[in-house]
Length: 415
Length: 215
Image (tube, rainbow over all chains, first blue to last red; front, top):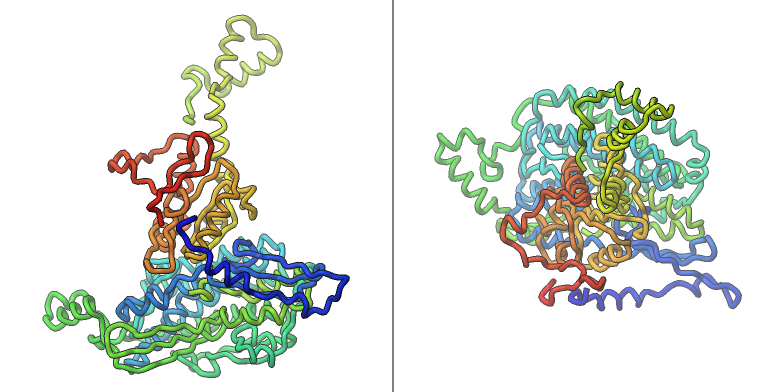
C-alpha cells in the first residue's frame, strides 16, 4: 500500500469537526463517534457515515462519499457523443435507462432533433420497466435491512423477469445501451409485447403480495411508522425530489409537472404521502409500481407504427442493407463511426423523473464531435443531504431504516 | 475427488443385504474383510479438508458498484448459490473466506479493500468480478485501480457486468482450484511465469512481498 498516497484524504477526513459540544452535554456526559462503513451491509454501497451518538440516540451524522468515484464525467469529455452513452449508463447503476434518457434528451435538444413517435413510446416502456426494477431492488434490500429476509427473494424473482425483457430487446441485462441519440437501438423483437403483457398482468398481484408480507407485520410497521419524518419545506430547501418529497405531501413529479418524451399522453396518478415518515416513503414507492404498470400497458396499447430511430442520417447509422447499395449511406456510416456527429455549440439541461427524483443531464457543446462538459444532477447525491436532518434525535436502528428508505445509489452519488 | 463405482458385481440390493448380515454378526473371516475393504473410503487429510473447504465457502457481503447487484442475484432463486454451500454470506471479514470484488475499485477505496482482505483469516480467496476491477473496463481513467495491483486475485470473471451465470462459473472454477484439481495453468501455457505482480506469501509466513515497481 506504500505506493498509494493516502495522506491527503486522511488529512481531509481528520479535519472534519464532530459536533460534540453542539449537543450541550456538559461535564457529565460524553458523546461517542461511531464510524459506519465504507464497508457495511446496511449502507447500500460504499457509503461512510460518521455518527455522533449519545447512548443510542443519533445526535449528528456526516456522510463521507467518494469511494466509488469513477471519473465518468471526465471520461465523457474524451468520447464522441454516441460513445458517451455506455459510460453515462454506469453512473446510477439501478437507473441505467434514465441516465441514457437524460443524456440523449440533452443532446437531442442541442441538435433540435425530432424523435419518432414509436421510439418515444418504446423509451417510456423501458423507462417504466426500469423504474419498477429499481424499486424492486430497493424493496428487497430495504426489507433485508429491517430483517424481512424473504422479501429479497420475491423481489429478485420479479427483477429477473424484467431483466429477461431487457435482454430480449437489447441483448444485455444491465447497462443495455438501448437508447441512442435520436431514438432506440433496435425495434422490439417478436414476442416481446406478449411477454410484457403477461408481466403487466402479473406484477400488480405480486406487489399486493409484498404489501401483505410487509404491512401486516408489526415489526415492520413499528420500525417505519412515525420514524424520521421531515416536512416538505425542509426537503425543498435542501433540494430533495422524487419519492422522498412526494412522501411528505408535495406532488412534484416531472412526468406531470414538466412532461418530457410522451408522458403527457398517459393517464396515471402520482402517489403522495401525508406525514413524510419512513412508512410514507415505503408506501409511495410501492404505489408507484402500480402506476408504472399502468403506463406500460397504455404505451403498449397505443404503440404507433413507424421508425424506431430518427431517419436523419447525419445522426443515426444507416441500416445495414443500405451499405451495399448506396454510396451515400457508406459515407454517412464511415463519418459516424470514425468521427461521430457534430453538435452545434450551446448548452442544454434535460431533467427527467428518475426512480429517486430529478435526474438531469447538463451538456455543453463546443461545436466539435465531443462534448465539452457532461454533468449529471443525480438525485441520490442531493437526497443524501436530507439524511442528517432526518435522523437527528432518533435511534441508531431508525438510522438504518431511514437510510434504506432514502434509497441512495452510491454509483450515482460519486459518479 | 472422483466418484467411482464400488465394484461391478454388487448392486444396491446386494450391498444392503450384506450390510444387514454384517450388523447381525453373520459375516466372518474373509467375507468380513472384503466387506470392510468395500465400505471404507480412503483419502488423505489434505484432500478431505480441501473437499470440504470447497463446498462450504462463506463469501463476504461486500458490494462496490453495478456488479454487486448481479452478485446479489446469485443468491436469488434462479442461480441459487446455496446449492453449492456458498450461500452463507458473512458481513464481517473475520468470518469470511472469499472476497468477491464486485465493481469498480477507486483510488480511495483500494486501501479499504486491501484492509478488509488483510482482516480475513487464512485460507482466503478473492474473485475479481467484472471488467472494472480486473482492468478498469470501459473507464480506464485516473480514478480507478485494477485489483491485481494490490490484491492476489484467484479468479477473474469478465463481463460488464457479468451475468449471474458467469459469476457462478467463476465460483465453480474457484471451487475446482480449492479442491486441488484446477484446470488452470495458463501461466505455463502462455509462458508467463514471472509476470505476477503480487508474489505469494514467503515460506516463513511473512507478509506478501510486493514488487517495487508496483502501482
